[in-house]
Each structure stands twice: as C-alpha cells, then as structure tokens.
Image (cartoon, rainbow, N blue to C red; front, side):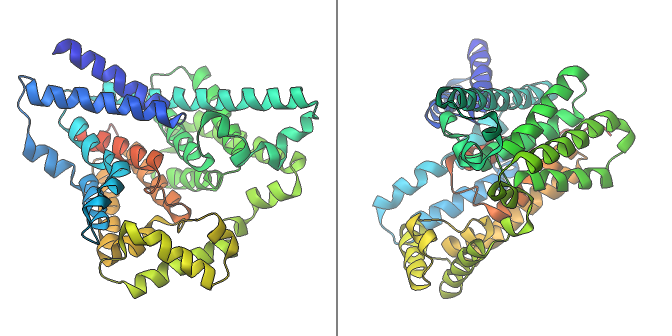
Amino acid sequence: MEALKKYRLWLLLLVVFTLPMYMKINNVLLAFYIGLRLVEILFGSSRFNYRKVMLRGAPVFAFFVLAVIASFHSLDWENIYYLETQLSLLLVPIALISEDDFDAGKRRKVFMALVFGCLTTLAICYANLIWEILSKGESWANWFTWSNMGHDFTPVADTHPTYLGLFIVTSILFLIQDELLSKKWKYFFLIVFVFGLFQLASDMVVLLLLLFFVYLAISKVSIYKQQIMVLVSGIGICALLFWTMGDKYMNNRMFSVDSILDEKRIERWEVSYEIFKENPFIGVGFAEIDSVRRQKYIDGNYSLAEANDLNAHNQFLEYLSINGAIGGFAYVLSLGLLFLLSVYRKDYLFTFIFFAFILANLTESTLVRIKGIEYFAIFSSLFLSWPGKAKK
C-alpha cells in the first residue's frame, strides 16, 4: 500500500498539472487517481473515517446534493447522466479529505503542480501564436489584436480563457506567499502570469487588481513588499503595452467597465431571474433549463444568447434557476462557510482563493463546466483536508 500511496500522489499532481489544459487527458488522470484512492479505502489497512469526511466535506458535498435534486427533478431515471459532470463534487472530497497524511508539504506540491501546469499551458498557446504569425507572414503588431487573444489564443491547449485566468490568479496568489521558491524564479513566473492574463483578455485582470487591494488591506505589506512591487510593475507595464498596441475592440473589452456589465450579459441575468420567479422553490432542473432558457431568449429577441445557447454567466443565478431558492441558499451558505473558515484559520491563501472564486462567479457559471467543477472540488477539498492553521 505504500507504493500505492506514492503513485496516487503523483497521479494527483498530474491531475492538477493538466487541469489548465487538455480536458480528456485530465479526466482520465482524475479517474485513475480516484480509482486508486477508492481501492486503498476499500482494501487498505487504515480505517476510513466516515464521520470526518462527511463533516469536513459538507460544503462540497452540498453542491453534489443540489446536482442530484436537479437531475431527478422530473423523476426520470434516464436523467442520471446529468450527474456525470458533477461526480467530482462527491468523489474528490472522499479521496482527499480521507487522507491521514496530507500535510503542508504535500499541499505545496499541489499548488506547484498548478503553477507549472499554467506555465506549460501558456507556453503551448504562445508557441502556437508565434507559429501562426510566422507561417502567415503577419506583422508582430498583430500579437496584440483581438484575433490572437482571448478565445482565439487558447483552443490549441483545449482550454477556456476564463478558467485558465482563474487558475493563473490562484497560482499568483500562491507564489506571493510562498517562501521556498527562489525570488528570481518567483518574479519571472509572476511577470509571465500577468502578461498571460492580459493575453487572455479576461475579466480576471480586473479580479487580480481587486484581490491585490484586498490583500493590501488585510495583510502586512512589508512581508511581501518586493513581490507586490513586481506584481504592480508588471500590471502597469502590460496595461500600457496592450493599451498602446492593441486594437480598439480589444481595448474596449479589456479596459472598460461596460465589458463586465454589458447589456447582453444583463439580459441573460434577467432571463435566469425570470425563470427563478416562475419556479421559486426547486427550480426547473437540469433536464428543462436549456429549453426553458432558450425559449425566453427567443421571446426576448436575444438572438446571440439563443444562437450560442449561453448560460446565465452568473453562478448564483444559475443555481436559482436550476435549483430555486434551495440552490441559491446552499450556494451562498457553502461558499460563505469556506471563506469564513479560511479567515478563522488565518489561512489567507485560501481566503484569497475563495474570494477570487466568488468574484469569478459574478460573471461566469464556473460550476457548470467540468474544469470549474474539478477546480472547486480539488482546492476546496485540499483546504478542508488539512485543519492546521497557517503561519501568521
């Protein structure tokens, strides 16, 4: 079983490493990791502490319970396939929280795996961008145009700019407080990540700035003064570079408040809220949400949303429309509990991570997509698996 533990840890690190990129590879690795852990639980000599897992994992399990309710809203057993994408919310907490030896050292290894996964993903995307410019004989000035940014920048790595942005923000938050990585590598990684956030043309740039000011407000600035200076300098240089060399559409997308609260996004929020008002207690469930929402898009003449079958792009409204008031309450309670528990433990790394996740959910339905579900399941379970308090 000792050899099994070693292989399982490496599998977990590979799962986190591939989280920012190729989804099929990542899912296969996750299945192997969970499978090995379940084998160890069932046939290993150590006792499975059911009570500990259930109590600690409750904030994550709550979302799986909501998925079960939404799947069987119509009491049709064929709807069980809706749970396929939600299984991480059940199995990952069982696998991680049941660990007896998941200490701070192993937790750091998981974060470093995410750091290197994000760096590798950006390297793949940038290599493809350079190849595209060279093979097409384009001007290097096109590097900063919309056709080479955002959704056009990330497909080669089978990822989405918003989720990659969330993973990068998590990596930045880890790097700022990490004391073991050498400063030269830390500063280099921070600059690469900040530049990558701008290349993603993601709302995560605004999120990063908000997190930074929150960080200044509640932490001792003098401890991480150099890291903060590098981060602020990188943000300023990248903003100036992309502002002066980017095209008009990109600049409006990146540097305008209207890009976050645009009219089309508000329309989608209104549609989801209307669905909630019509089904206030338990929502419409997974089986009906797409058809109900699409019909409302048609009725409201929201052609872009209807053509692309867009979701609410707000996780709270997503739960309200799918699970009703029960879903909205569970969502706020679970995330609020994780955030407040991290503050109580003085584990400010996870305080910032949960804050980032909450902010990201204002403009994205992250728990609808597999990458968002897996990210939340892994890092929430990682936090809940280790009850130790962080150093002041």
